[in-house]
Image (cartoon, rainbow, N blue to C red; front, top):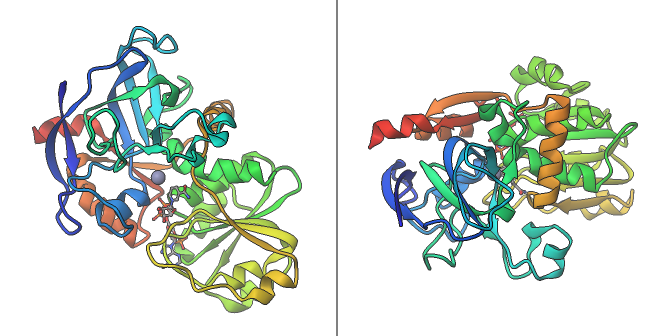
Length: 352
Ligand code: NAP
Ligand code: ZN
């Protein structure tokens, strides 16, 4: 066993605090990674504070991991010591079901193993995530990171990037598509960058008028303040596709009305409480659909990372020390994040 250090939540309302635990010794197909940076996803907050059911304490969040390979198992031939690599939201899946065979391990029919707060078959406990010094992961779930990408700014690609890329690709967003992005946070700002790079015309819907200039600079063609009912009504029947990243329950009807006939809105935001049920007529009248999407498979994550390296796309980040995590969570709740917090793991040693 390898002794390590992380930051853990010990209850729904306790601040995160230093936590000593162990990682397994790398098995034949494993890679041991020294973590350099870990992004802060709103899902970390939902889990640490028990907003979703099922948090097991102590809980070490973090699933936007960038680090350097420190050791490899004898059969982990895909990686060598010193490589910069990434780990996202999953560290295992059954590799046998139809979804795994299709490269969509996130929909593993036996349940994928999340990077944190999932049953861990190696320890019989739960998995501990990236708010830690190091991690041991099977090579199948380790991603290659191009040296063209800044490692801190690349970390959020591992969740915010793939969670927006996967539905954009699935729904064939490209040149000529008119796409809405709802919410300008971690996921939303990546959705703007990726949809823009895919050639779409992008309209951002935000509750924060102060974010307008940033949205345009990130690649949005237009910005609509979603609290302005007249501005929303004026857009009726104009968009092919909407990706909704909002982390809180809200009325979906004004967005559904903005879809053209056969338009699709994908919900990726996962609020703790349900959205009010949409009015059925909004769906019937234009044969419109509301869908959902969960992160993305490993192959498409690598495809997204390679696309980002080729197009010079990374996240807009504010790098913080580990000790500021609770402050970062509070700021995230106030939509005061531009546009992703990333923890510099060097700071963790100061907690030892
Ligand atoms: P975030 O950085 O906090 O961004 C969420 C944005 O939603 C905010 O910046 C804000 O944008 C908007 N918003 C927040 N509260 C709102 C409210 N009450 N009404 C209207 N808009 C509000 O969070 P994130 O990390 O991007 O994550 C977003 C959600 O996606 C979370 O629920 C997270 O758990 C979920 N998620 C899902 C997946 C998946 O696989 N489906 C993966 C990762 C994360 P404006 O200021 O622009 O309005
Ligand atoms: Zn996430």
